[in-house]
Amino acid sequence: MIAVLKGGTTAAQKENLIKWLSAQGLTVHVSEGEYKTVLGLVGDTSKIDMDLLSGLEIVDQVARISEPFKSANRKFHPDDTVVSACTSKLGGGNFGLIAGPCSVESEEQICTIAAAVKAAGATFLRGGAFKPRTSPYDFQGMGAEGIELLLKAKAATGLPIVTEIMSISHLDLFADVDVIQVGARNMQNFELLKQLGRCDKPILLKRGMSATLKEMLMSAEYIMAGGNEQVILCERGIRSFDPYTRNVLDLAAVPLLKELSHLPVVVDPSHATGAARLVRPMALAAAAAGADGLMIEVHNDPMHALCDGAQSVTPDQFAEIAKAVATVRTAL
Image 1 (cartoon, rainbow, N blue to C red):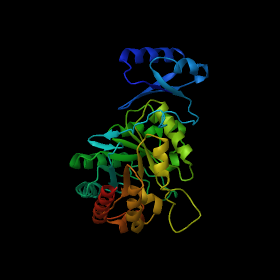
Image 2 (cartoon, rainbow, N blue to C red):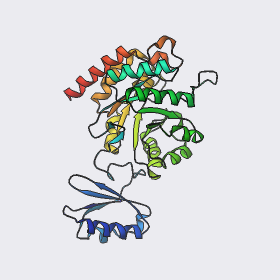
Image 3 (cartoon, rainbow, N blue to C red):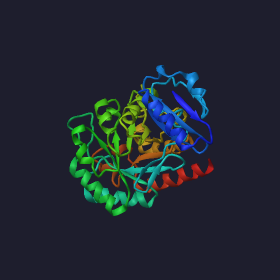
Image 4 (cartoon, helix red, strand yellow):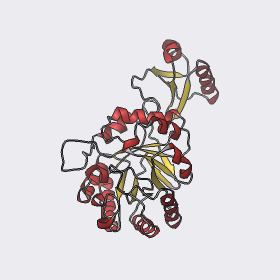
C-alpha cells in the first residue's frame, strides 16, 4: 500500500502519521520527491482502513500495490534511485560504463586494462576474482589475491571496483570492494541475497539465465527487504534455443524494468552475445533503449585470456564503443 501526502504537509504532521502507521505493525518507507512525498507501507496492510487513511487532511491518495515486489516498485519510489560508489554514479540521468576483464589474471594485466578503460571513459572497473565456470576444470579465478590486485588497480586509477561474490563465506574478503556483483547463477541464492541485504554496499544483481523480470525484481526485493536499497539491475541475456549467440539479449527488459522499478538498469552485451563483434551494436542498442549503464568485458590480449576471451573487446575497441555510445545518448 502507498499513501501520497499533499504538498505543504509539515514535518511534524508526516512524523505523526509515520508513528501511527508503525504502531499498526507496518514498516514505512519514505520517498521524498520534488513535488510529493510517498509513504510505502510494508506488512499486513489489511488492518488499515483505506477510507480512514485517505480521509486524513494531509493524505492526497491511497492505493494498494498488487505486485509482490514492494521496495523495488516505482509506485513506492516514483523518482529514480541513484546508486553511488566513490565518485561514480548510476541512475537518475547518471550513465555508467563498467569495464574490465572477465577475470583478473595478474597485476600487470588488470592495471594495464584499468588505465586504458579509464582513459576511454569508464567509470567503474570490473574484474572477476572468483569465477563460476560450467566446467570444474576451467580457471576458477585468483580468489582473495584477485581482489587485492583489483584494489591495486583502483589505487592507480581511482576507479571503483565491481567484482562477483560466490559464497556467503567470502563476504569478509569484500570489505574494500565498492560494488558487489551477484551473478546469474546466484540470482535466486536467497540466503546470499538476505546477507547482502544487511551490508552497506551497492549490489549489482544480474538476471538469471532463465529468469522472468518478476523473478529478478523479487530477488532485488530480498536484498532491499534487509535494508540495503542500493541495488543495480543487470540484463545479461536469457537462455534460448538459438545457437548463434551465447544468450538472447532482452532489450525490452530495459524500458519494462524502468517502468516497473526505480532501480538503475545496466546491460551486459558481452555475456549476452558471447561474441566480441556483437558487443558494439548491442551496446548502442542498449543505450538507445534507455539503459543507465553498460558492463563490457575488455582484455588487452583476448586471444590468450584465461576466461571468455571470445566475448572480450580490446581497449581500443572499447574506446570506440564509448564514443559511439556517447553519440547515441546525445542524440536521445
